Amino acid sequence: MKKKYFGTDGIRGKVGQYPMTAEFILKLGWAAGRVLAKQGKGKAVIGKDTRISGYMYESALEAGLSAAGIDCLLTGPMPTPGIAYLTRTMNAQLGIVISASHNPYYDNGIKFFSADGTKLSDEIEHAIEAEFEHEMVTVESSQLGKAKRIKDAAGRYIEYCKGTTPFFMELTGLRIVVDTAHGAAYHIAPSVFGELGAEVIAIGNEPDGVNINVKVGSTYPETLQQAVMQHRADLGIALDGDADRLLMVDHKGEVVDGDELLFIIAMAQKKQQGNDDFGVVGTLMTNLGMETALKKEGLGFVRADVGDRYVMEELNKQGWTIGGESSGHIICLDRTTTGDGIVAALQVLSAIVGSEKNLHELKNGMEKYPQHMINVRIKKKVDPLSSEQVVTAVAAAEQRLAEKGRVLLRASGTEPLIRVMIEGSDEQQVIKEVRELADIVEHAFG
Image (spheres, rainbow, N blue to C red):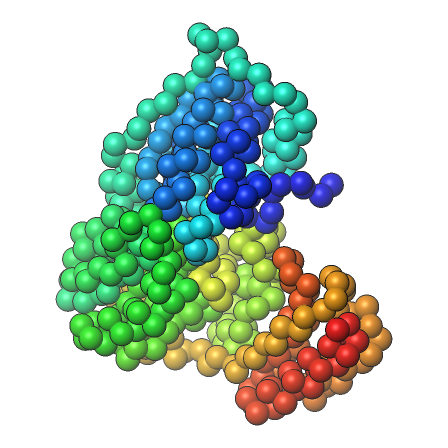
């Protein structure tokens, strides 16, 4: 059954516009509280990033949950994976994050976590939506939920992150630029790396409510690249607004994306375990170069649909622990329950320390294939493979690319677009093929 409000990663929209209104979020808190209350009175952990609208939504959620009889534990600014961790360790039944991740400040969203620190099941999300059909009713005054601020929330999460590294690991001697995108990790990430011994140069760590993700963070690595070169740093770390996404920059100023970081983590795990009896989950957008490199190393690889929810599902299905996306959502299930930018960065740093190689050398273990994508605007949403002409053109392109390339046609989930992506070992051929295929798609559906 299709959900009315929940997308693949919670509920998101423009501040003040439905569904991101104070009224809706108030009832959302109440609806979630009602579902929770049916399982016995419980408590919810609420965290947020640094958007100015977070104050409004935090109050609305607190009021709604209280009206349903649920206690609230408020953390203030906290990375999304930090809420997953605190929900688990504080014996809460629900975790709620107020964030629109890498979006601009005028957007916001609500993400939920279960008691074990994972995304809510479809069943629970349907149950929350079903409560919206009922009129909001407040419990008896004696049963109202209470609210309490967790004063040491940041410290708890800092210690947890440090604990995901080998006990002997020290970052002494490394100069690291840390860009927190003026987001939720501004007061956390610099402390994590600094307390492990690194010399930390923090940028993007002065949030004012409206500057989150503005020309900083993982979606704008140019600022980090400049800072790494300016300070002659060994590497740079860039997070997004809610710190569940990671990109890095090596000492030469070159960006190291999610695919390359996944490869580095996988190679370190293979070395540590002394075997290759595991694999990595990527997505439809994962670079073919990573798949090729992993297979050369004897490691398994499978692709999931785009979205960390689908990566997680495939990890559980395969019984593996490492997965993620090119954009930098990286999941290390042997360390945490969800994508975590700080934890992923620590695993890469552990690989650097353990190998005595720098980030540039480690990323060169895989060769990225040239990848080009064209967005074709269409009149209405349609299955791109519903045209016989397009199917024939795709097959012909795949035959020309042989095993040295890949074709992907994907309908956008939010806009009337078909994304035409081709990658291969020969960049000139890739450019030629993607343009020709995009023209055929436009002729068929435009």
